[in-house]
Amino acid sequence: MYTQSMDLPQKKEQSASAPGAPENPEYQREFDARLAQGEFIEAKDWMPEAYRKTLIRQISQHAHSEIVGMLPEGNWITRAPTLKRKAILLAKVQDEGGHGLYLYSAAETLGISRDEMFEALHTGKAKYSSIFNYPTLTWADIGVIGWLVDGAAIMNQIPLCRCSYGPYARAMVRICKEESFHQRQGFDLLMTMMQGTNEQRVMVQDAVNRWWWPSLMMFGPHDSESTHSERGKQWGIKRISNDDLRQKFVDATAPQADILGVTLPDPNLKWNEKQERYEFGNIDWDEFWNVVNGNGHCNRERLAARVSAWQDGEWVREAALAHANKRAAKHPDGRVGEQAAPSMETAPMQTAPTAGST
Ligand code: BYC
Image 1: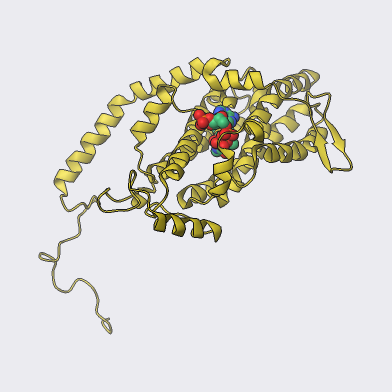
Image 2: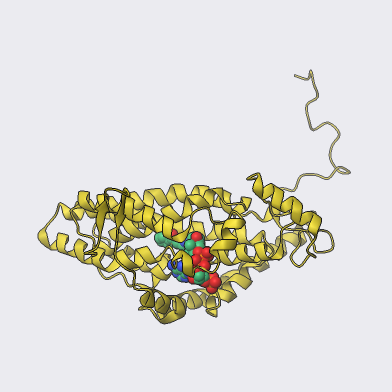
């Protein structure tokens, strides 16, 4: 499986970078200097414990969002209106699963296990994006998720490709490329519907009305209310603030709504010529916190789906482990290929051609 576990931190006693290693002013100065120079911090490098914890929190929550994000769209795979749209949706949902796996792998390099991360999700300790607690009521919701939700995700995630932690930044490069396709297929789906019947246009407008505000909430609370922004910026994890990203998203999306022929559900949305940006109305923060705190439309349903997937998959994990143990017993030297290469002692002397041989 694709993994970054080659970069796993060494054992505590072997490495000053291991979780729980003592803080050290000299290492701290070196760490600060590297951040100031815009260098990546890598898995085996020393890092302050709070930096490690913040990354584990953010990356694991990001991974959970991808995995939980498969549910509202997965709900429509069997009901896609054409074979083409079904194939696209299937590929998109599969991509989200892949994103979750890269991100879990990136988080593992910080010394947390995947089981611990799942445990945090299943017990409600770890968050995932508020957006996935809204229901997908019609086929138009699938287009709107691509256009608005993936659009907001890209806006938030492009700066993460330059975040200070190497394994996270590299995972984000590939994720952003795929998200960009996701956004375009959503726009394309909606454009097709807008060129269809009046009923289809009404369906699209209804979906836009329901998803617009939750999409703006994806960027998190106002900067003044954001508990992690200050440190995140100092550590080069957060390059652009929640409010600035939200503004960029509105500025990019409002003209796209005009092209589609839909109205964004905000009477206060207007172009400010002087400031060269859109003004927009107030977000309902009570709704946001209600959803974040587990009381949205689908919070319980989403979590229950993840927990039952985990329980139903127990036999697969057991079988995979039994298989791995069997192979390890068969190949104690760690080689797991079809045929283990002969060891130095048993290898015939002239297996490799020497220079000048024909
Ligand atoms: N939903 O101090 P703040 C996708 C929490 S998946 C829930 O500003 P930070 C896709 C926040 O965690 C997209 N909770 O935090 C998948 C914190 O609580 P904790 C997911 C939220 O970290 C499938 C508290 O509020 N993207 O694209 O500086 C299909 C205070 O917030 C939300 C990512 O995860 C929210 N919307 O900034 C389609 C990107 N917002 O942890 C698409 C990576 C805030 O102290 N994450 N909270 O309990 C980030 O960039 C940042 O973590 C955030 C928040 C901008 C989200």
